[in-house]
Structures are given as structure tokens and as C-alpha cells.
Length: 122
Ligand SMILES: [Zn+2]
Image (cartoon, rainbow, N blue to C red; front, top):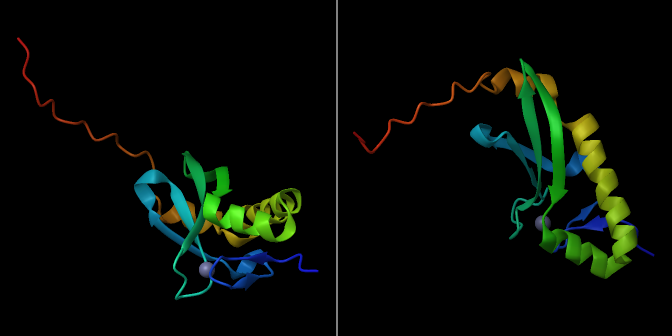
């Protein structure tokens, strides 16, 4: 009776600390949640979004992508899968993400780039 989360690539994920977190999309304030398997064909399993409040990063939302969710729902049932995956997301947001570090590397007050108006109206 498997109650573990599994990636469609076959990798069992017992603990939320196993995911790889990648923070590349700085301008989107989005952290990618990746499969721990380097050769995974899905790679991105979900994301965590946050907001910058002053110089603090505040969690906004986290979600796993449908292929990963569907796969697990097919294995343990959708109710159970939802519970397992939500628990993982919670742990990622609460324990795995170093919010101080995130805040540090995120440019504060994204000086809204004043897009030069392309059209000149008279
Ligand atoms: Zn995988």
C-alpha cells in the first residue's frame, strides 16, 4: 500500500525536502519545484509564488502541475493524492524555502520599467 508521492518518471518522493527548488524566475517572483531525478522528463513539478512586501518575501501560492497531480491521483486516489501533495507544498513553503535568502536576491521595489511609449499621439 503505497502512500508515497511519485513522479511520473518513477522517482518516489518521500519527503518534501527531496524536491529541487530553483529560483530563476525572479521577475515573476516564482520558484520552480523540480523533480529530484536529474534525468526526469517532466522536471518541473510545480511552483511557489510570492510577493515582495518591503524587503520581505511573503508566500502567495503554491501548486503542482496537472501531470504530476494526475499521476498521483491515479496511484493513490485523488483525495489521498491531494492530501499528500498539499502536505508537501506546505512543507516546501514553510521549511524548504529560505525566504530570507529569497528576499535578499530579489530586487526590491521592482522599479516598474517605464515602458517607453511606442506610439506618439498628438
Ligand atoms: Zn521525475
